Length: 489
Image 1 (tube, rainbow, N blue to C red):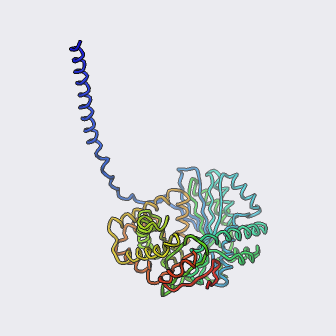
Image 2 (image 1 turned 30 degrees about the horizontal axis):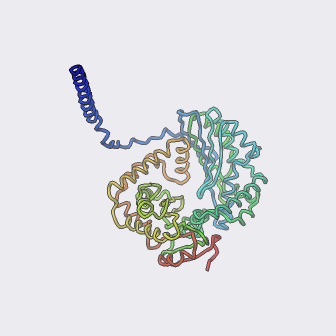
């Protein structure tokens, strides 16, 4: 009996040993076979970027029509942009009227009320909206492809025959004043408003939002006059992207958009480019008594979008901050110092000028250290060449974001519209990635020294003046204001 048990135990031991050896051998082979997992994949060279062929037509009334067929999805996107002309007189009123006109374009057009227009667009399986930016007004529309020709008729009425019903004007004014009241309780809004006001001075770009008083003084007649003097087919571009036939769409556009008969607006004088900024560092302190944190922005005038330095400055910004979690500002001020949850920098490049700035929201007690760290990072970018790997990471981020932005019909239409209205050149999209990749470390340092200033930037801080004023005075002369912009003693 004992011999039988020993024999069975021996057999079991042999089986277990065999399994162990086989498993170990398999594991070794498997580990060797999958050693590739330990190697990071090598990036491929960027594929050439080629948009589908665009068909561009100039209608007899001067309107530019750009069409790109894309039959992968049964949708059509239509974006229209109108360069707005504003005079140099009473800029606050002009900006308020431009904003209201852009918003009200889709609140009733032709013989339709706002509700009728919304119902018709919904019935077509589409959507439509409008707004105004610093340089132009835009109408965004999208619809299922089978109703694209019907939608272009709606778009034509919105552009050429906006109704500006008195009831819609009244509703807009009430809502805008209420929204503005809420906005001016937001420190981030106040930082932007006061920063632009100081940087741009007496230029439309300096007005982020109109005053409630200016909005109250607007009437339907004033809005209609602004539209008549500022909107023109010759100053307009319509971009259509999606599943349609270009020949049929062009015929429909001629029959609808082509009826917008109006001479080029010439009654107003174009606004000049933004003027140079201050010669010394200035600190603007916006008092919010009792605030537990402070929002700040540091920056200065930079470049227009069409400027040759735009691409090097974009790369410099990506190294420094941008929206990258691996940027210098993020790693220093958030990760290492723990002063803030979020920190950023940005290039705001418009048609006639632009700004560079960095900013954050911090606890009151660490606001000045955070500002000093940001200025130190500005100086490091100005005085030290960016290492090759860090430079390439920034460029890869920008080219990747560019590709993502063009992954939808709306993204393509937006970019083409911007190119036409800002005069960026027909090859802008095709050469974008190549121009980013061509930026060198010396280019970054050059534009940093030119546009990312530390000796004479504007520093705007929104917070409790009683807690901030003394330490802020070490950074430069202080101008203290209340949230409405009136001097604070």
